[in-house]
Image 1 (cartoon, rainbow, N blue to C red):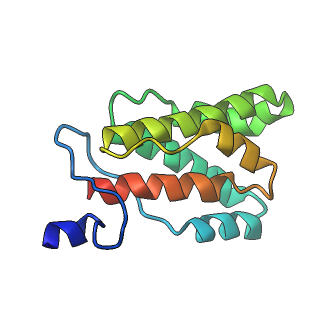
Image 2 (cartoon, rainbow, N blue to C red):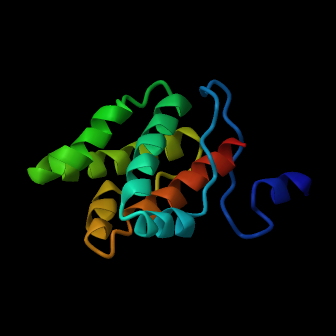
Length: 141
């Protein structure tokens, strides 16, 4: 019973268990609404910090996830002038989150395509991606 509560089965969530062999440390649980609202309050400044940290946490979580966080950040800042690098970076980050979800034993529900679409809807990509990242960190711990 305690295993069910610990991994969310009693709440109707998904069944997961910690996986051996994954790199540590795990990422940080953040409130998705806070990530989004802090980004609004800082005119996007916090989103950039969050984007770098999220990609770094993914890289640190699983050595098979190949990402250079600084390059991803560069793509969504200066690369946004050309549009395509920013779109590609947002899409690839969603794919990395899905890869981390699968590695943590969760069905990879994150979608890079959905993340790109949500960027045009009030900039909801950070909210969506953080909610998906939280599933990985909960499953890992």
